[in-house]
Image (cartoon, rainbow, N blue to C red; front, top):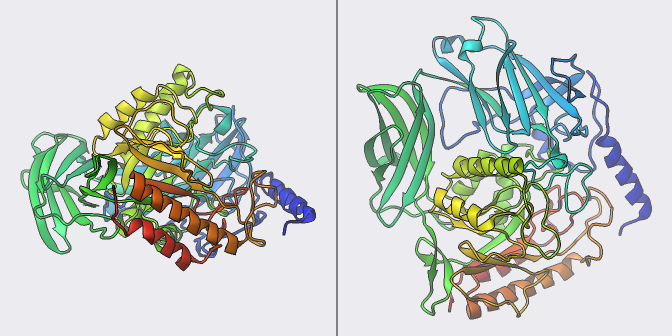
Length: 605
């Protein structure tokens, strides 16, 4: 039971934690009301020690995660300040795991500083500096030489730092960050200064791994792999940096330790790698082929990266009764999903550890879901790696930006600068995550936030990635475009949903059973009045009834998918199947049995 006294104490605690002054050496930031069980495993010297880019791996690399100097100044200050304490990278400055736990505003500038040494064996090679993601505008200097700037909170970026390196000794890296969050039109998802339902604490600054790696003068810059199971090939495109004259590409597909296919191609051109009698990727059998890509010049190896791919196909195709259905590998599959916002009580946007990331995917699978709708956030590469490896389909949102349409309207009028920023970051999201077999659908507009020129945006996304489906929003829909039409019903579903047309029909949001668990609350503020709260036993019965209604719609009308709200509580939202710190609220076995009645049966009209 909630009490007003506890409500007040926790609310004040959160406010104080987010309003701390800059940390000073030796000072300990106040802890949030909740910590996940992985918080104790976070290294004080190396935030995330795993290689951060599983789809393009090089053996030599150096993580720069760990303790950096930091300071917060007015945004107009443009030269390096005196540093007031230490921050743990790659955790947002607002998070407890950063060691700072300080609210950051649009009037401030966040500074990072650290020294590092380049391994002697790298001398004579080019050295690349990679940032997994920085929210939102970053300027970067090395040894007082500006390397460049980058805008965008969800995509990685890199610099060739070779010419700025000293010949020996310490190298000095400086980063400054601006993050207007809700004070601007930038893509930000559910971040908002001041929070408040349905928004959450902002996440500013470096929030994914920073690392170095050496390469030759000519090296592989990016890979694009697109499976075609009907033709039994993998379409491969390799882009490089540096000179490309008389350079060729060799790609080898691997089934365990055995070669499954081999081909040579040219830089920048798409070529086909044969994968005969391919083993298909699916949630039940998430088979991944290994991929080795080598850059050659006259038979000499210049660069080599290892990767992986899954042979799978997503499509919409009519059933025998003529109802359009979602198909995986040319077979109907009911996609039963769960919404996931990717927030953590201790790291906010950044999971405490890689094991924590994996645990969320394993939990969704154990609960009987075969799909995750990633809501309002683009995750680090390793999150999608675990979806690929463990077998979880993903509907991927573009983080929302700007404002919602006025009442009774489906679109807004964007300013040109707002549209340019949104479309630039949308393109980076699609290009940056295009190789993951787990992602089967793009959702450009989450809940209509910033929705504009819907038909044009969806046409652009589909042209950029024709091998995936596009859903323009999981909320109310006016523009009947895209591959899928979504309906939202809380707790739902209702019998009045009309199915028709050439689209596959899905329930983009159902469920939503608020279950407060004392001792596992971020705050006792009333979550979403007048939402009903449930005891666990009551919620379990309601959930079983919900899956029964979904089963009826699947069998009778050809409903293709449904997404339950949601995996975990998030700050003031209490409708998770898990608490915010990842403790189960309901019996996982009971939920799993109910879900499998939907995902493991094949009765379709």
